[in-house]
Amino acid sequence: MKRLLNILTLWLLLFLFGCQNPNVRINSLSELPEVLQAGFNSERWYFTNAEISPPINIVKKKGISGLANPFLLPVKDKLILTTYNGYLVSMNKDNLGNVANKRIGRGISAPAAFSRPLLFIPAEKGKYGLQAYDLAGRQFLWKKKQLYSRSSPLVPDQMIIHATLKGKIFALNKINGEVVWQYQNSKPIESDLALHDNILIACSRDGLVTALNLDDGGVLWRKELPEHIYTSPLIANDCIFIPDMKGNVFKLDLKKGTVVEKNSFNSPFYQPFSTDGNQLFLMGSEGTLWALDFNLRPLWSVSLKGTPTTPILITKNHLLIATYQKKVYLIDKRNHEIAQELTLKNRPAAAVVDEKGTVFIAMEYDSVLRLESSKGEEKQ
Image (cartoon, rainbow, N blue to C red; front, side, top):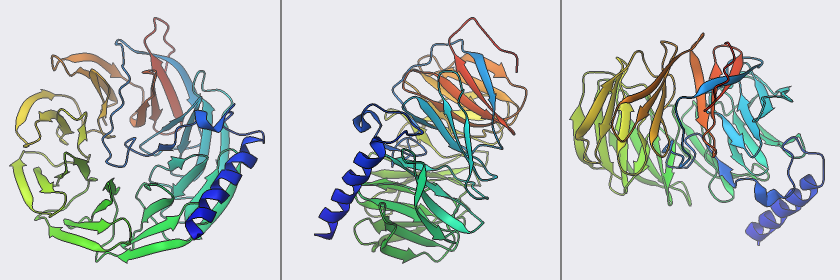
């Protein structure tokens, strides 16, 4: 009965908010995507089946109030992002116009997650560690004091999963914020969670990997890896793929937690694996891009300039990579060659490719670029 009431409440909210003058203008709520999360899905693949047609050029630049978080959310005709200094920003994707800046707090270091019509925004300091904001009604639905986090939320079904700097993992009702279950991890969690079916995976910096049952938060297994982990886990083919700070990469069985495969490279990893379902992609801090098979065997590599600033974004035929050397690369997956190398004025801090293949890049410290296949190019 309680679940039925929650579902009815959600549909009532959707109906009422759809009749107002929304920040994300819509003719029908069914036009909005159901869910958008950092990495696009709960497994955190960073893959979209859109295609980029190089060369791409900068066609528009727009200022924003601060440094954007590492993942941007393309919600219908809008680009939604949050900034480290506490702003929620909405802009038109076509021309980056109609910029709406709303100060919502401070210390927002992880990307928000979207589950229509709600945006779930984590923060690592300030008064609230998690806020649910309605994009249609342009108001907060609920807020949670403290519960500080550097992890991007997950929003499966009617719940939101939120990991905190004190090691707690919460499953909350996404409509009213009520706690469904909570789990106390032995160490703080500072990276994103990953989810497949009802198995939730969390990694702590000291190398502890924990699997929880999504239904009740019960522990399925724990595994201690030998080195520190600064990246988020990726789930594919019923396995978990994790790189560590010593250059090791691990493949763990999703249901048992046992190490199935391991390989070692000569570079620390600060960004997670990405995959298109056919190959794994990973870039070391010294600038080598690796393509691996699912047994962690190298298939090919490319030397690039700089440490990656964001996870590798994968499209149908290309990889998009941004680095601290102010570079953006397009790598052709078919021939493993650099299809394009762009040098930007400042370092890229966040990127996304939308369903049309348009590229959006947030720059340090206060602007967003729109890039597309075009002869026209604006100066930076």
